[in-house]
Image (cartoon, rainbow, N blue to C red):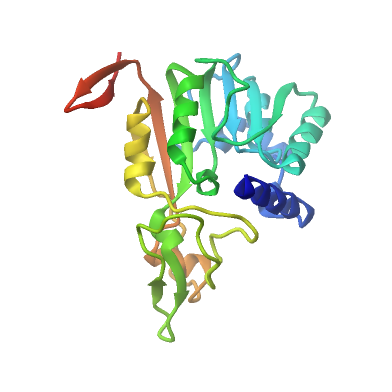
Length: 265
């Protein structure tokens, strides 16, 4: 698909440019890998022997930390150059992991109810159909398994530019369909990618409809009092860029008002 090829090429280029998205785990971070990954205590301790899928998470950071903590790790990403960092760091640290090139909305290479944890950094914005991804994650997670994810907030993706009075303009409609247009504001947009706006009914409602119970939701603060207009800290005072969620895969499906709903076992 065109959007997959475009995003693959864009992330390959980010690796070549030394992007922050391609920074591998440091020795210091690997000393306490779960604390590095999880400041909120969402990840069960210990993870030794647990099967973990690092989804759309190539780059030699997340997979390495989980493997250092003793997890049985698989990492999937569309960019072969991001995955090359995982392979390089795994070899350097004498770690074993499964490295798979593919799209986050097609996990057909993995068996049903295989993983204990799926951990996904910001990436759902690169696919048009988030429900296809949620269904696949639901399928490969064990009942009771944890899904930790971070997403771009829809309002942040609506932002296009600033006025002469340094006011932020939401120039993209909330119900925009299709790939987002290129805009002047690029603080949370990766150059060369195809991105899609997923509304809250998709981000949260879709998660519930796919068989998950939402256990926690936070908005990482990216704001500061001294930020200059247009900068990350100033922008974050008005428009939060991200949402982070912890969800659990549940078991029982019922029919309510002609809709299928999932309930905890």
